[in-house]
Length: 231
Image (tube, rainbow, N blue to C red; front, side, top):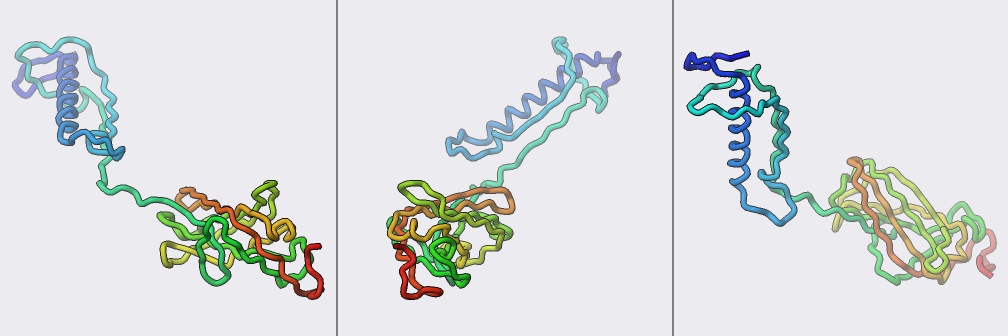
């Protein structure tokens, strides 16, 4: 099988395929040399993804041949991913507290325990108001999981899962007033606790944070305001 070149000469298809391969490799090498080596870990045009599917013959290129392959001679596709030049924003999340506004937590800080309107005794009658602040994550329809556990015995005291929208605020998108119902307030009172948050945004990005804090006193209240919840 032969193909006719622009000069009118008849050139074997195998030679034309070999020439296209050489030209393609030369072009890709020239593109790669436009960018200096980078040790930043960010992609450059030299890191472009190139996929080529060509049926090429191994025959050597004949001296003096200057044929131009037609579209049917070789089938190939090239895909190049352009470098945007801007690094992605850092992703992070902070666990916090607060009933009406987000309050950041410090290690070892004492957190208040609230008696809930549902009443009850030491079991499920108290909660901690939790909060979340996020950076670099999609704030809408975010899945938020808040947990509280004892720091010394690793007993789970609370697990709450929300899907909600964070609102813009100081230092990032945030929300407060998330009720973390305690299975046993007396295991939290005056004990070190681990408060943790895990989030997944609408794009599937994940982040987590935790702080060790100290539980405050479980307050007295109805139905027995004169009796302490914990013996």
